[in-house]
Amino acid sequence: MARPSFIYRLTVSLAGKAAPLAARFDKKLARGLDARRGLVERVQAWVEAHRDLKRPLVWVHAPSVGEGLQAKPVLEALRATQPHWQLVYTFFSPSAERLARTLPVDMTDYLPFDRPREVRAVLKGLEPTALVFSKLDVWPELALAAARAGVKLGLISATVAPASSRLRWPARQWAHAAYRALDRIGAISQDDARRLERLGARADAIQVTGDTRYDSVAERAERFDRSREPFARLTAATGTFTVVAGSTWPADEAVVLPAFADLLAQVPGARLLLAPHEPNPDHLAGIAEQTTALGLPRPVRLSQLEHAPPGPVIVVDRVGILADLYALSDVAFVGGGYHRAGLHSVLEPAVFSVPVTVGPHWQMSRDAQLLIEQGGAVALPADGRHPLHSQWLVWFHDPAARRKAGAVGKKLVQAGRGAADRTTALVQQLVRGAGR
Image (cartoon, rainbow, N blue to C red; front, side, top):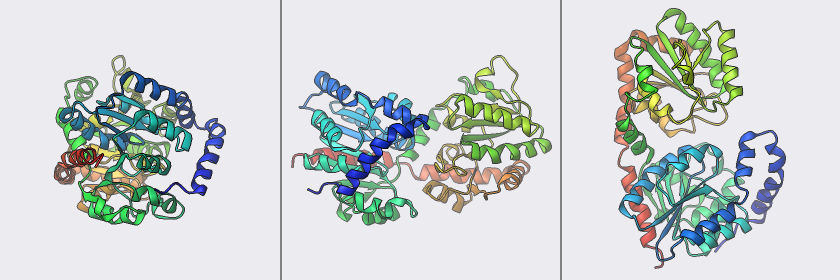
């Protein structure tokens, strides 16, 4: 069985040595480093208290929130259909901590860094029956060590953007053996299946199962209750034209806020629900400064609505409710398209029949591509203030056009349902094939 290359191991080792210095300037990285202290000991403590080697253990890894939402319906289905299995969930990004706590698993924690000693310790403790990666994040050290230990390897909701850096050197060379070691792969589409083969995956291991996020967002939308707070309070403002701008970064807000100032001058009843991706004090203060500079009324924070009258700009200063907030919108702007982090989920507004606008950097999102091609979303140029304002005006003055664009998104989500069942079946097959 292959092992990671010397260059890959050296690169990971050097990155590990540089991380503490970089963490001084990156709070997210600092949080990840701090949270991993004692990780191996925490895993071992759980193993000693709870691991039952007579029961299969499925270890699912999803690096961040998006991938975690793809894994969520599969974990829920496994818990319901295989209650005797033990389930472990790991993640890489601190942003996934909150989601991890809501999942029906026996243990959850950070993924160890992809270094031989940590990987061996966690694998030896957990002794998983199967290790399943969500989307694309297959770590070579972990995957190949698991394969050598006889662990079945899977990849679910697998997608590779045409412009992905993983298709180029050196990432493609480093990960080739890890992708080749995968026993079962559920690809989102046939195009993704072909690109997975370029990464090293075996054609006989791949089947097209679809994207489980379609099931996840559809089921969440069906459970939405607008009588709950804060939605009931926000719904009470009738007759408004509501824009929800979700998961925004400062670069997105530099377009959205001026465009909304232009809109408000022509549509006095318009309101903006702005949900920044990271609602920390510095980010919220920056939004307040920008609204003042644009001559907009001072924004009201969502947490203040109980004590202050709502204004045309409401800033969402809590996390975990954005997907439901889209249900209150007439139109949506999905953030990330003006930021290097990439576009966030366009499915969350689409499921509520809400037309979408996105920034120019959407090409890594298959969902955005489908919506744009079918007329459910509009991509903005780099200088997006006036095009965004104009598009909002079109949808305000022509409700029929707005409904037509929104219907595209709802239809797209409904057509994608069923992936969770197919993907769950793939994981079950993976476990049943263990030991053969």
